[in-house]
Amino acid sequence: MRDAFMSALGLEGEIIRPGHARVWGVVRPEHLNLHGTAHGGFLYTLADAAFALASNSHGVRAVAVSTHMEYLRPVQVGDPVEAIAEEIHRGNRTALYRVEVRRGEERVALFTGWVYRFPAPQSD
Image 1 (tube, rainbow, N blue to C red):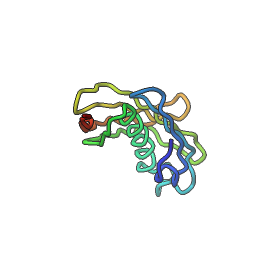
Image 2 (tube, helix red, strand yellow):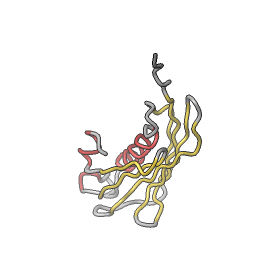
Image 3 (cartoon, rainbow, N blue to C red):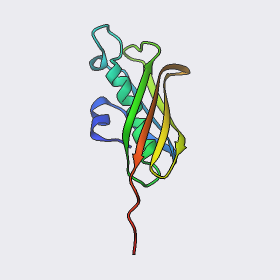
């Protein structure tokens, strides 16, 4: 699955199963910050895209309410990166997700996010 922003950044994604998703890509020169490593905004977008896929995988529209990102290690140009999202808690109106950003087996960032889940439309 892709959206326009994911496409612009060269990212691919998939829903693994309801509540779980994966997004991946390769760090390109245009993704670098002034230090020559992957920009935090690129890594955040990678995680946020996995978060969006996972949270919307139940057939109910979900939008972010709050997110938090911890950056653990720098990532270099040419590095393949992936974000794995997992549902931690899902209620009627909110849900919590945890996303690990990885370079191979190495965790490089950790993201958490809450979504608001819109009520399903009533059928007659």
